[in-house]
Amino acid sequence: MLRSNVNLRLFYAGESLASLAAVALAVHLSTRSQWEPIALVLVLLALALIGDRISSAIAGGVLSTAHTAMVLAICLLGPAPAVLFGLAAAILTSAVRRLPPGSWITNATALTLYPLAGSGVVALAVGDVHGAAGHHMTTSLAFGLVIFAVSVTTIFVNFLIIALDTYFEEGRPVIKQIGESFVPLLPGHLAAAVLVAVIGVGYVNLGMTVLIAAIVVLATFHYLTGALIRSEDRADQLEARSIHLANLQLGVLRMLMDALALRDRTTSRHAGAAARYAKALASEIGLDEDEQEVVQTAGLLHDIGKFTWSDRVLHPEQLTDEDWAVIHRHPQDGAALVGKLDGYGAVADAILYHHERVDGGGYPAGLIAGEIPLASRIVAICSAYDTMTASTRFGPALPPAEAMQELRRASGTQFDGELVEAFIAMLERDGSLIPEELAADFEAEFDFAQRVRRMAMPIPGRQTAR
Image 1 (cartoon, one colour):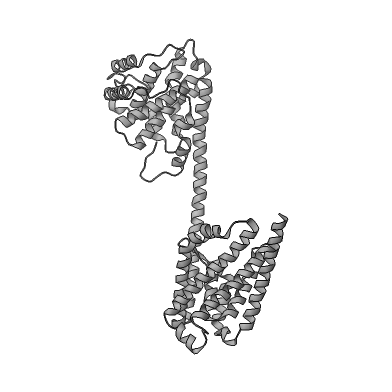
Image 2 (tube, rainbow, N blue to C red):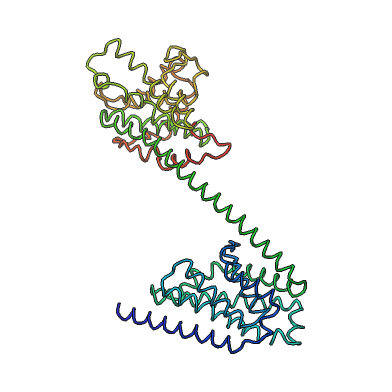
């Protein structure tokens, strides 16, 4: 650790010396021509100082107006203004953001060294941009390639200095940082470099009007991008609140089911089995995934109304007429509970009518045949079959073949005949879908997290478990 701190201090000392040397060299290289025209100097200085406040995200990167100003200063003015602009921008940014001393040093180093690196590219490709030969070059379209090269060079030098700082502070290898942080953003950097080149060539050939127009466009783009980001933030907050609300709503159901399971394990096991059978039968008859979800959910929750029962009714020794009235109300009570959930209307209807009979002798409404929701007719068959084939306190389980015979006896009177035959055909082909010991795992059967997200973010046109 001590060695690491020493190395970091030595690195900061080296950065400080490099920054001071860059400023000294810029002052030495400064000429009067580099500070003309004064209007361009003032505009680029202002952009360098406040440009980070009007920077915008593009194509996987950031179009930094400050960096745009620095590149234009390098290419159009010279190294002295560019380095001094960079130093001023580093001081202002570090002060406004209240950065620690190490970050002050790194910012100053990056914003004074990369202008020198860019100026080296200009010197090699153009020479003195204020001389006669240089002026001829700057007015050609080839100057755009020079600006592009300067932009890419300065971006890389800036990244390299920051990567070295990260290496000495955190120990992350520079090569790894290049692969993880620089390369993925390279398309955005190249796009930004192209835009800077277009602005530079436009200014040289058409004057200050182009630069002012570009500033207006960048500022407008930044405003619109900021508005979009704020809108997305509000949408994210709304989504989070919606998910939280959905969690609360479904959490109440889960709590009720868990509480019912503690009071009566057979009801808990039966709910899971009915849900599994119901979904399989829904798939067997060709219902789509949304309809299967409604049926499965109704199977899982069809007895949730029993939560309202007293222990005397839930574990009866002898039932009175009043007790039977309570029992007959459990579809309405369950539907009322589930119906309070947004988007679960179809499930509530399936629960409400799962004790109806196709001959009209059921409850609570005495519906006949097709008047009964399809999901209710499916749940009725699956619930009855599981009740017959599972051992309860009321007696031993029937063998599957006898339970199927009982379903056929009630076919056309209590149950939908076509659904009974489809259910039996499925069982004869696939065998029992329920393990001998089915754990009452409502978390898995109900797919709780998935349903929370679906409730919070309904898909337009999709009618899931309404």
